[in-house]
Length: 238
Image (cartoon, rainbow, N blue to C red; front, side, top):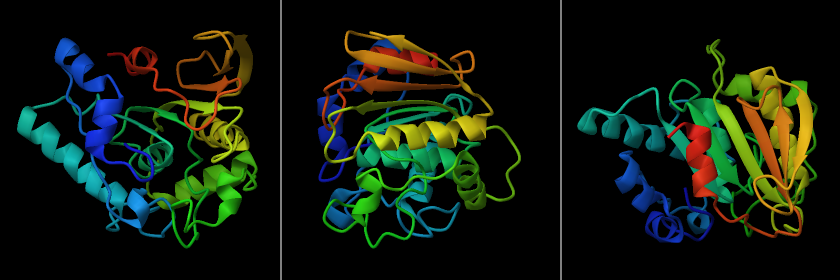
């Protein structure tokens, strides 16, 4: 999923996923949103709920259509995106944990960080979230996500999330808040930092045995962290 101001077509051209899908035999969906400066709906009550008519429900409709039309494997559905697309990856995983098997995304915020904001774009949003000033306890994040789909008692998707330390648009504290949220939902605790992983200047933040949750802090990198397609595919098991 593209960032604010972008389109699905642009994101397809910016990344190598399409050519990789041809090589490896998976299906890509590159959706577009036209609302709020082309930013995904991650702020409204309906957008942060299940089956309430938000962008998240539209995306799941696309996924279900694609599975049916192409006889795709419903247990291997993955989400990725940059900036606003990473924000929606968090929301999609929170509201449709039974649809998305895993996510990997770049320079976003925790699901629910923008709840109640008048908009989701840099021009319309409450700036506190992007500025890294929405800080909650793990229990508060978990409760917020569980309230998005209260009937659900199953497991949540695996998450890899990337962020640059020099990001001035969506500030680095948002990485820590995502890791708090997902470590609570996945029931894993911080175990270690692996420096210069997967490349020089990047630190991999490992939770549990590293199979359910990892973060990546990119030293000196701004908004947004470059897409690491090969690492995403490894994370997704593709």
